[in-house]
Amino acid sequence: MRSPLEVFISDRAADSVADAEEALEKSMASRGLLSVQPNEPDLYGYVDEHRDAVQAFAEGRSALLDWRYGREIVRLVMAAYLSAEDGRTIDLADAQTQARLSSYVPAIQAGRGASQLQSPMAARTPTVVE
Image (cartoon, rainbow, N blue to C red):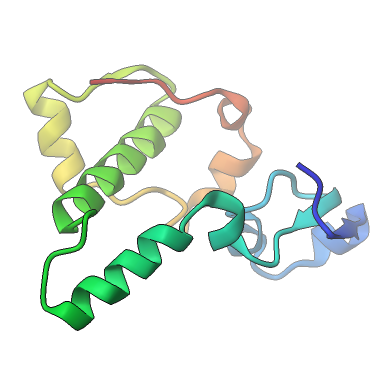
């Protein structure tokens, strides 16, 4: 996917970033040619969801994608982070996994993400079994 804007980050610039962890969370690489997406809602298809949510709020009704849907998405994202950090497949039906996910905070959110961004496991694709 080509972006209308790209930024080149040199090794020297990447090494000088005070909080590289936060700066790199959404990027695909820590240096080199990085794409800047100026309008993520259009790019990823969120426009209809946003429009429905605003209209539902104005009409006093529930949106098509309600809080339960959002909660499930967050649970799946947290499971992907957990799988990547542990370097193993996790089973969402497992009671221990469910208990761990209920209070889980990803390393990157807790300020420990640099180790994940620089580790060999960072290149591994997370695996979640549902």
